[in-house]
Image 1 (cartoon, rainbow, N blue to C red):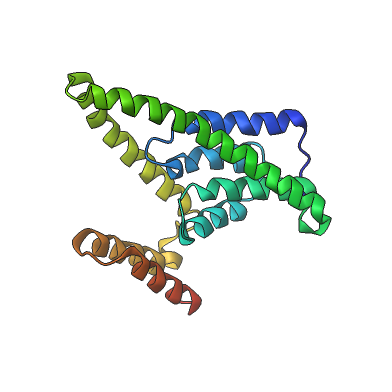
Image 2: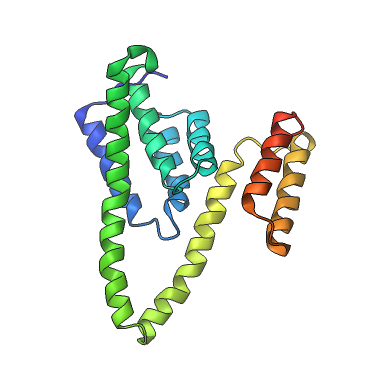
Length: 198
């Protein structure tokens, strides 16, 4: 994928992640639907495959789940350079994309969290603080459901995708009813995918 980004485009990318930072109440992954809308559907700076691969790789790797944002920035930078074939120029733009997206998503939410948690801890007995905490739960759950729905992608044909939907239902039940470690389930899913069953 080859795209051209101006300085205004980089600034727009930074500001978009700044605004998403304040929405990332349940973690950065809850902003994935809007990131997809912006980077894939609206600006066409990423392909759908790059988007889902960034999330899958970051979720499978050790470390914080916000790393998918860094991978999105990396891919935008690579696309702006015309791919890795451009050499060090591509690596430089990819690192620039990582810096812009990560600073944008981290600084506002970290600052707000630091200030708000200090205040909320001092005032934890106030009715408003308790109501805020109770009201945020459904918002976080809805954002996580929206992210899960988005990641299903092209898997909406029950006749073709029944193994995937069956595995999803079984995994959901296992997570809900047992204490099986999630890495075991990821490993089983990877194994089934490698064998071509899913």
